[in-house]
Image 1 (cartoon, rainbow, N blue to C red):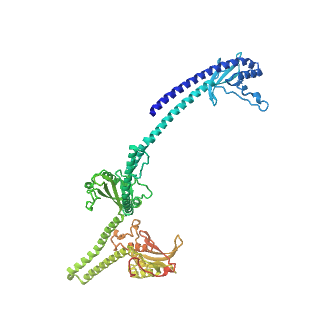
Image 2: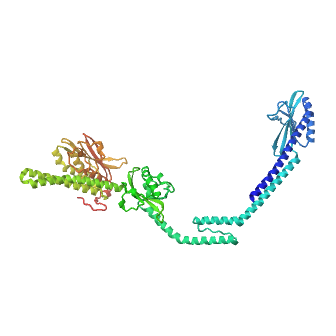
Image 3: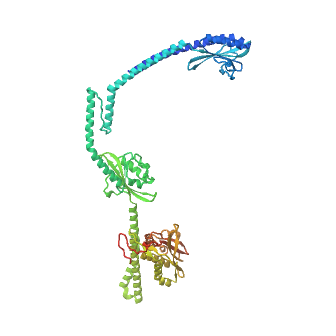
Length: 638
């Protein structure tokens, strides 16, 4: 109905406007002919007057002509240069007494001075269309200027055209007003209730059970609305009965996922993230990223993406990966995993080196037929890997170090047992001396391992004020005979009035013993070992005491200086000439770290080596109170 009404109204309106336009065109043509004829008539009368410069008569004649012709809008005379010398309703003489205004006429580009016929054009103004007539003033083949004449449109034709247009518009608006009123009435009675029902059904389908339709209608449509509201009310009551339980279970699940130590990432079948817990964000450095809805392969580190791309797509597609994964080096089929789970191990290098264990598990529907998503569990097993490596290395090193002295002891004792009667007293004494020496070596190794194990535990030693001159002098006295036997000069330089430092006396004594013992071991006859202690100020202007142990021994190569403090590392392993467990400097490093400082060294091969460390000065009265204890475990001072 609306379309038919629109077509009819457009056709009628088009015909009406076409008729009005035709009338207006005819009127403009009549105005053009009338203006041309009127311009020629006026020009024929005033041209001789203009040639005689009789402007008074020109003005008089033009005024009578303007007054007698109601359709004339304006009259303008201009000379050869285009300067206006007379015009109606404007005249230059009217302002000569106060101000001289020189005005010029702007002629059209198509205007020709020698044309036989006037130039006619039309332009629109707020008062209607005006016909402009430009008549050249030629007298005896001489161009005198131009006459510009403005003709108003025929008022009768204009009024008739405007009336027709207004009536057409009014009819068009009336028709469409009636159509719109009909559409609105139809919408209020039928269409609007149906739309409300459609919106209500969509809301119910989307889970909005609070949707109601409140329209006061009767009949079948009203009954339909009543039944819809009753259905929505029942669904709302059912939802309220279950929403609390579902919310509680959801809160429990979210709390569990967010607080577990393992990283958890839940993906849909398109590998878009649905849930990412804080642990996973920390492991993959996703703290400032919003990952929900993004493809997880675009956010994982490069090596993780390379390793997981194929498995993720296969699991999302529902392929059974058990047969393939149990052949892989990083999958253990004896771990009790279900066939939908796959396990991978990945090493990250940035920002620090870490080892991750990633478990991919299919999330199936309630019938366990279709894959609904993928659960990714991420475990940081860096510490576990390091402990396993350290345990293996420790067992290997200890086994090697224990096997050598035990083998020597067993060999010499077996020799004494089997061939003791055939050996001389001196030979038996030498064999017993060697066995005793190897026993001492074995005892030292066991003690060093126990000391290192105790130092690497979580125990924290309480420090006391210590006078560093005492442990230095005690250590030098201990090694004095050893140095004399090797022909090594053992010296000390201790600054007078050295302040007390915060430390553990027995542990510092062990540090000095290891450092000076190593210095004597690697210094040749005629060399020198020096122990120094002096006061200094660090960059924060706090007082400290520096302890140095230097020697003129064989020195340590630069490539070995970084590993010198590792357990069981021995420089003499390169030449196999000197004995040692390789634990001494590792013990020194741990003891110094218990004192909240670091051990340093500088060495040059063939010149010597210097070890040093700094200790904090005991300045406060509380620091001067001896307190030797261990947090978490009691340890004696012996």
